Image (cartoon, rainbow, N blue to C red; front, side):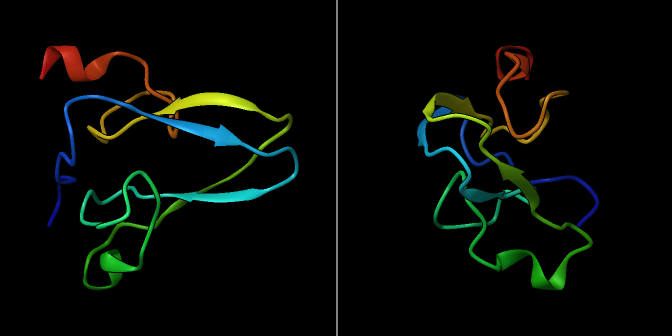
Amino acid sequence: MSDPKIAHKWPLKVNLEEGKKYFWCACGLSKNQPFCDGSHKDTDFKPKKYIADKSDDAWFCCCKYSQNKPFCDGTHKKI
């Protein structure tokens, strides 16, 4: 698997908690989008760790092609 699976062609809203670690799914195989559930184990993908610098809502990418991972940058509108 050289390209990630597109989990959704829309982002998911995440309520971030300051200081909490999040592991964003990079492969697209997780059943717990947008978070990693270990489904990448037989791929070359690894989750992206993100530590929230403040408590806030954020939109996490689910198409897996954002240039600002784990955040959505609108790339899903072009695929």
